[in-house]
Length: 200
Length: 240
Image (cartoon, rainbow over all chains, first blue to last red; front, side, top):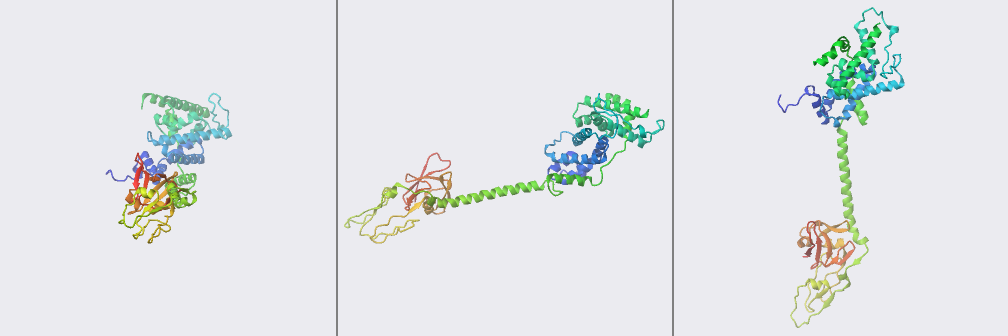
């Protein structure tokens, strides 16, 4: 490609697109949104287990990115910047719900962690001996994730659902790599514990 | 994968695989349009214009400020023409001396004297009684000034500062209490004398030149004392 040829927006990197947005290219921002909307919506859905809320926060994340463009520096990957905004929004929503006590899961709070809830779906549980279908397994997992304390939920979802690297997860959460791995490990352990109790 | 990562992954591999295999939800149709609409709502503008209006608003603001500035300057220049009328009259010392006339004996040949500065300073006019006098034309004289035959040259009119300089082909603005030359007409007495735009007229013949100064409308031979930007000393500009 010659240096003076104009790149199609679909061929531009995220940072190139953002530079174009700063110059007033509206199509470049649309491309950014198109590129990341599904991953972001999925992440927020796994964090909140509420599709409408996930869509709303995903849109809000892009709006905030737009208005913070002047301050954005292309030191890191744009996706980690976007996920950081989304994570903060999700955590705010989680805390807001907690204050309003809108959790659908019943149970008691684990005072040791301060935030965890038991996964209580015994009333609708199938025969424990029966093999779960993949759909049922996903639903169980989904509920298990939502029952995790927020400090473990985000790292697990980012790593295991969104499949970000450990370094990227650390960057999104603003944590050290060791702390990030520790939380992922602890989160997985809690999930496993909940699933095992569910399966008993 | 690093060893520590492998150790982290192995015990939970079944769980991890289950998590990664969860169906991925997608954003709904019209997601991008909704994002644009939210951006526009936040900006308080119609959709699809992310950055155009602020740029136009900035340009419009600059034009409005420039227009106000120019209108203000024009009003100030017009104000100068009224300065001499509105200020209390402060008569210069030369006004107090009426023009004197001295006669020359007729048996002597007509004396042609170059009227010098000294003569004019006290209003003395030297003329030959028998000779016809050429009419004296004073630029900017409001009343009289033309001599006829043996008649005494009438006293020149008095002019305020703006009118005085207008007679010399210069216009002044009152800036910071100082009379600053705003324009010099080509070919005028001001231009011949070396007066320049931006000069501040400090005195005329040593008499402080203010907005309230009133002078006789006889320009020739007088000397303007001028402060010119960039010059350390006052300049003396004889009116030519």
